[in-house]
Image 1: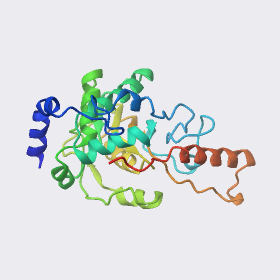
Image 2 (image 1 turned 90 degrees about the horizontal axis):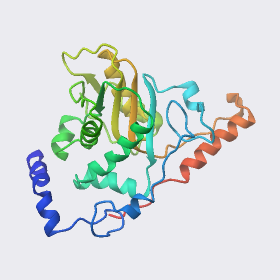
Image 3 (image 1 turned 30 degrees about the vertical axis):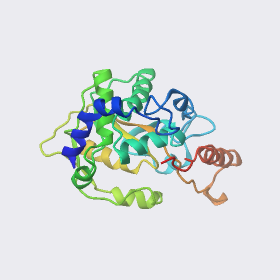
Length: 273
C-alpha cells in the first residue's frame, strides 16, 4: 500500500496535466482547494482558552482546564474551525490520498507560527500505529510537519515517539472515552533521550486534545521540556454545562454557555464527497 501511495505521488504531476485538479470542496478546476473556498475558512481567532485552545467569549481559562488542564501540554492551538472547505480538505488528504493538499494546509500552520514566534527545537508529527500506516500508506500529520519544517527550517523529529497500541477511531467517542482510548497508546522511541527541548506537536485535527496529550506524555517521558500542539483545525466538542452546585457564578455560566454556542455555530456540514 505504501508503495502504491509513493508511486501515485510521483505520477501526480503527470496526472495533473492530463486530469487537471478540481477543488475538493466546490469542484472548480485549477486547484485542489481554490482561492474562493480558502476565503470561506473560519479562523478560531484569539478569543480562546489559553490552555486547551477552545473558543471562548473572552480569552482566558475555560472551566474544563481549571479542573483538568491538558498536561503535559503548555497549550493546544488550532488555526481554523473544522468545517466547510478546511474539513473537506483534511478528509480528502486523509482518506482520499489527495496528497497535494498537504502543502496547501501546511501553509496555514506556517503562517500561524510566524505570527506567534516561539523557538522550537523540533516539530513532532503525531504518529500512526504501524497497521494504520501500512493501510493508509502515509501519515498525514508527518506530511504537514515536513512542509512546515521545510518552510521554517525547524527540524522534523519523527524519531522521538511511537504509537505502540492500536486504538479505536476517536470520532464517535465522548471526552472520557477518548482519554481512555489513547491512554498509554504512545511511548518514546527506544534510546531517545531529550534534555528539556521545547517541541511542537503537529496534527490535522484536535477535538478534546486527548491524542495530543497522550503523545505529549510520551515526549515528557523522553525528557522534553515545554510541549505545545498545533493543528490545522479544531473540531466541535460537546460541552456539558455544570449544574449550579459546581460553584459557577452567573457570569461564568454564561461564558461557558457562549463558548459552546460559538463552537456549535461552526459544526461541519455534510461532506461534498
